[in-house]
Image 1: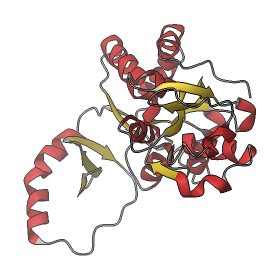
Image 2: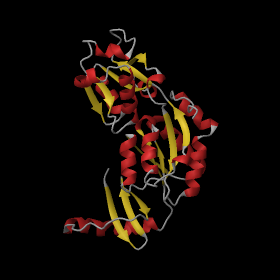
Image 3: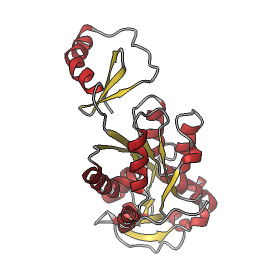
Length: 285
């Protein structure tokens, strides 16, 4: 993610994907910038300062697995509210780290509770106020049905040379998959076969292009692929409960818009859209 920081009396203007966002966070001015960089900053400073005097958009950081439904419902929110919603998708823990480093998000929607707790521990958001938005489940996918996969133990078969997962250190989907494989007692034995994607869509792509024989992904992502078959559903008792919490970032100035957007996400009409993409209702606490 490329961004420029412009310092002025009102705070910091951040140019992100050719849009300007204004924040009032403590940041250190770089100790040494060459003349060409400063020249670029000066050339765009007028644009940034003008933008910082106006109304900012709503910037939502969200788990990659939400890309299709969240894009649809956010466009509907824009039509209804007149507020522009900019979406940035990625692995949940990676997004949380970006927010902790100063990325100017207003709302964060994670594919698990750990990334939200990471921010809550740093007083960037309050986990107590998290909206439990959705649920999901893990499945094993392959390009075509071959050997029967009756359990995760079947993944130790000689026919499975490569197994794709989202990186457990970056994406909750990978952490859930690791828990499930550990519960089945096959995690250690699969180490030489594992390949990691930066998020769940990347792991799924490894299977789609033939770089992996099987993958463990969310059911919702598997539904978006025309080439993959679901060959096994992972028992939810093998891993932590899958839940998608949505939270406001504490120091955002868009409090009213954030509250309105979160209310919209939890409305019956919006939840119906998520269900159409295969998401389930959030599990009880």
